[in-house]
Image (cartoon, rainbow, N blue to C red):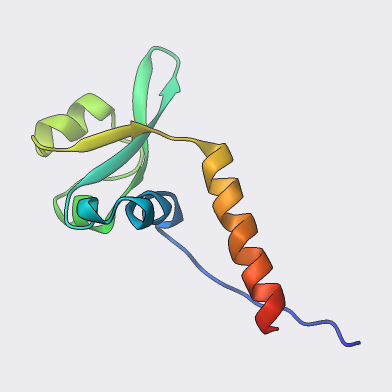
Length: 95
């Protein structure tokens, strides 16, 4: 059997996985954050939040000042890994 390689790019996978489970949030600004020392730092933003000016690396307080109705959740690496494993299994079926 020949080796097959698939390259996929998911720039918004962290927020996409959440929005897929909660489609009502599709048009809302969503930011995921992680603790860094004593600060909460934005680690992922949805496309809607990005259009409103939010960026990865800003503090959560600054992000909430920019977007008053921001939905913010803690970043969960385990959930993202699980989602990527599901995608990997699907890719094994089609390649």
